[in-house]
Image 1 (cartoon, one colour):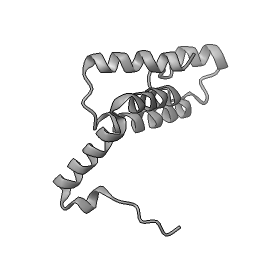
Image 2 (spheres, helix red, strand yellow):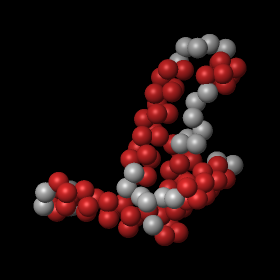
Image 3 (cartoon, helix red, strand yellow):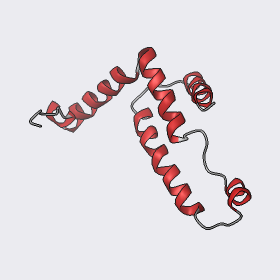
Image 4 (tube, helix red, strand yellow):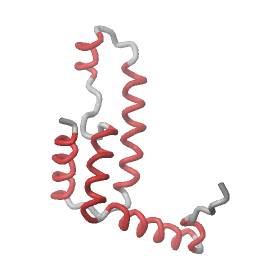
Length: 106
């Protein structure tokens, strides 16, 4: 594979790179397709279904493994949080995203 991949850092300086990256995220995640993908990512990562220690104990009958389970959940959420950090989502947008993600989980 000899394809060259574009990088935000090529935009010229840290501020321009950050601006280029923000614009790229906005292009990708705006519009209906972007909303569908963002809702799917929120569902797949469990962004709105964070681990509950009480539920873990009820399900597994042991505290063993919860720390790892929680760390994995946090890592997944961090990826989506990174994406959402580039978007200008209003409170209304965030409520709609959560609703869409929860509906995807069904």
